Amino acid sequence: MKAAYPICLLLLLLQLSFLRAEEVILQNGLQQYEGASDATLNGQMEGSRMLNSGHSAVLKVAGVPNGGIRQLGMIQFSDLSTAGKIPKGAAIQSAKLELYKLKDAGNEETFSKLQPSQRYLHAYLVLKPWKAGTADGATDEEGVTFSHRKSQGEIPDFWGNANQIESGPVADIDYDAKKPVASPLEQGVEGEWMSWDVTRFVQQWVENPESNHGVLLLARSFYAGAHFASCEAEDQQLRPRLVITY
Image 1 (cartoon, rainbow, N blue to C red):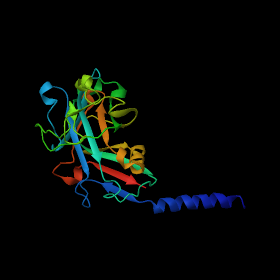
Image 2 (cartoon, rainbow, N blue to C red):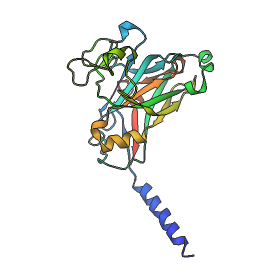
Image 3 (cartoon, rainbow, N blue to C red):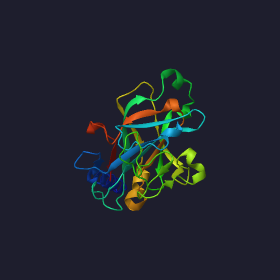
Image 4 (cartoon, rainbow, N blue to C red):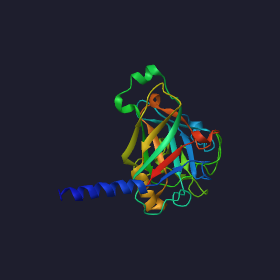
């Protein structure tokens, strides 16, 4: 009978730890938080590569079938410690990036031809600073575009190096390509939330706030993409949110 006491005590401690857990939801317009920003990087046409979408109500993520990049999504939640009241160095139990899906990028016929591995959207840890900008399909000298980013609002800070700007952000230079997190797409299902488990990312940002440059969203195929309500969406309840439990 005595051997059961340590087990019971352990279970009690685990229950108490969950009771003490706190949840924070970061979403623009909620509890005076305004630290989230996003932008679509458009690379399908030469003229669109320098156009900023930091003030667009829609965040688009789509690729092309042969591995090229058509539209990338970038999103960042800043001020985790101050606005979110998350202590620096806190142990993050869970963190989810949630985006509200407005529509599919492709159609049922093309989606059905995709390989299973293409039916996901992947989130990658961004390694370099950037600014969303304030334009909507127009030029903005300080806003991020497919061809370059602006970290300080001065001269263009190119993605990776100048020889690779045609490809947008460069793997393992601008974003960590080794350990993405994925969320499955359901074709024809709209008006729902998609979720990515970004616990590892948020833990790093809390421990080292200067490393928080947000995430990059990539699709494996144009037909597997989706359009989401952005941080600028009129309905603030549909804006991107970061749900953290610590």
